[in-house]
Amino acid sequence: MNSFLNEYRCGCGKLLLKGVFFDGTAEIKCRNCGKINKIGNIRIEDDDTHYSLVINDKGIIVSVSTSACKILDYKNNEIVGKSFTEINPTLPKEFGRKTLGPESVLDDDNYFQLDTYHKSKGGKIIPITVLLKLYKPNNKEKRLFVLAEIKSKRNDLKTFEENNPSFIKKTCDFYFEIDKNGMGTYVCPSMEKIFGFSPETLIGKDHFDILPPNQRVEAIKDFLYFSSKEQPYRATNSGAEANGKTVNYEAYFTPNFNDSGKFIGYRVLGWLKK
Image (tube, rainbow, N blue to C red):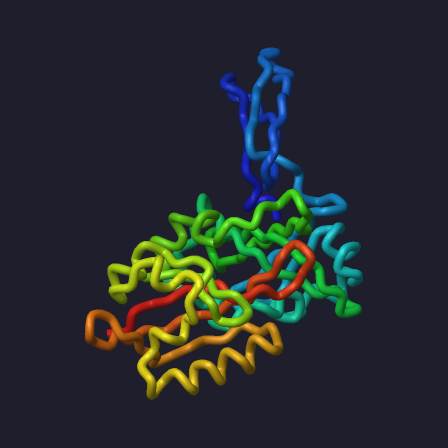
């Protein structure tokens, strides 16, 4: 598993630290030259609140850290070989294609952050923030490194776009958030450019009002069904009225949870269809 670890070196070239880390800071004295190095964004991942997993290109867990077994209540040989969606059921199947397939926008220097939850062996819901990182052991098959941090009250509830501006820009055409009643809580600037609606006309309003009448009933039906189960889903061949014309798109509705693991709505990534 060493191929995905980041190296931190002193100016003299001496290796100071090797690992994958969350936010934090540390001062490390170089044993070679004696210089004090200040390193940002570090916090070792395997402890009581952090753990990691490695997923192959078929979505199967191939490796886990010691803390992952402890927190998720699995033995190593019980969790290795499982589908990642059994541990992280909120992610749609298409997510694997977006992150591990030829169209992936992830690379060795690009993290993808997501608020979600993992399920323990006994079915316990564990609200987490995950950082996903793509890497290639031996420059062959792709692997997805999953670093999980158990959520706490100190985690702020920024929008997915605020946490991932470059990822959003590269991988989708528009993004918005709705609450569990379908009311808009956040829309990205491109929504106005694409659909002709300003944020003021969407935030606090029923998201489904922008759909043509002949699609609205079915869209609401899907939303009510999947939101009652707190499950992700995809809306295809949808349309929205924009400046008098219909814009076709597809969208992935990913469940959004607060720090207590309570379902609060959906984060929606959308792509225009030609």
